[in-house]
Length: 388
Image 1 (cartoon, one colour):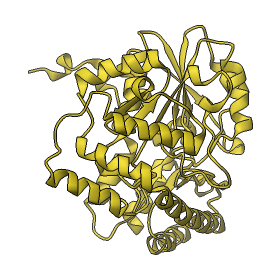
Image 2 (cartoon, helix red, strand yellow; image 1 turned 90 degrees about the horizontal axis):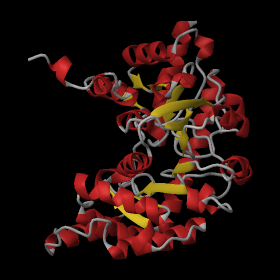
Image 3 (cartoon, one colour; image 1 turned 180 degrees about the horizontal axis):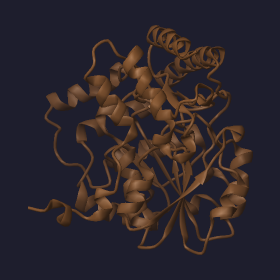
């Protein structure tokens, strides 16, 4: 059987995730300190876990509506209005998905036709480009710069727009850089998009992890709600990664098409997770704030430590990553990560896993305990000393 002739070329040419490559290697080694995966080290809030347990004990394990339980969609609308000044109708504008990743996939598949161009600021999360390719679209990278704190600028956006541009991915707060877009930056982007029929996929999974001020969604700006699909979820803010629950909120005509794809591909998100998410949205604002405060402490600690080591990085204002520059070592991003892993057993992710503009940087997660971070920093300093 010649599988190379059977499996589509576009599938074969998709590269595996650069994040998982180093995570998998580290998993097979003993005594590895990992700063590679963006997974909160906090437990899901107790009351949320309790609701999940109660749901199982009472046998509430049936299908929900395709779009998700109406009660949950109503709480999502309440949450978005309360926390981010975004206003949606639960019955028509919100779709509950299996993680934020499914919401991203549905949005792209619902909007992109063959030949359509999708603008993707990079460095950014690894899934956007492969999903665009699978949808038959053309991913167009917009390289962002460290001197701009990896924000998307109006000039960089205008340089990439063509008559084929259909969608802009706006991945802020950003994974891997920790960069954010404040209102003044978003206004510049919105001024370009209001004049054109270009939709926005605003991936706001790290919205609650915005430091030194409130997260602002581009959907909050005048004229942008009708052009924007907001993607969010429960993994990062509520430490619910394994519950696999996310959602999309946006214009009714777009959500309607996303729902059709969801009906045939997934059916519905896990019911137990949906019941638990209602509890999270209603009663866990304080848990969000406590976790964010702890991340903020770790953020200041790790930025200071890397700058003192000579691996300079700007101060990230969102998510739970830093993106230090390693060009001073003379190593490529992959060389640095491989040598560090095998010599000092510390796992981080090469910056080029997030796009070519990430070369010369590494992604380091601080979603780990202070003790964990301090030991990793000690080993990294030892590795740097060995290079000199």
